[in-house]
Image (cartoon, rainbow, N blue to C red; front, top):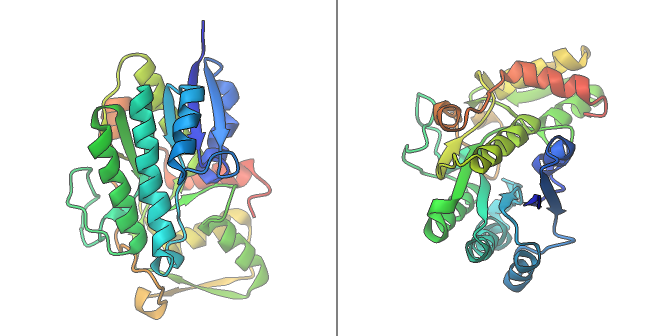
Length: 294
């Protein structure tokens, strides 16, 4: 039997790297992992040629411009990767009847809500990054609404790439004190859990249970960045660094961030049977599984 083809774009980032680790658990699929070295998503002809050659059954797009603060001054490149490249992928996918799984962000919201965000809540991005990711969502909904799933996530970390967990461990070992904001709320997302959730959607689709649309996924629970940092240091055994809570106003950044990023995961649980582990459990798993998570 011919194996179904799963194309991963942005394969060298946090999420793509975690999907790569799962590859052996899904022998029924033939995975192709690409990053900018193999496929420039901003080159529409290259994308069409790649899809014509591979004829992927599924695309999991992990590619994104995620330097939130830098995006404020690097607007053109940010939109090129988060929107124009998504258009190239969507058009090629439509041509080949490829099902698209695309990763988006909590930054499409302004963070002024008091309850976890649902998929149909009003979007209102307050940063260039958030606006570019929203435009990417809109492009997908315009070109292939019936064959795409958008999964919004938040506060992503793993043993790969650059992220808050690795930064807190590194700085915790270098400094005697750290200042971390205590008035922005959310739930961290272990990229390995998101990778499993995306593959669960693919498995559902294989069984004829594919429901297109927007979904939310992060780990369960709630914390501030300050509480997240405290837990990281506790689990990593860092005791010689004092973490000082500060307000967002005391820690200015180029890009405005949502002050409340909790996502409601009811829909992805209901439609796809996705498990949502507690953020503290997943953080412990990451730190115990990867001694090099630093």
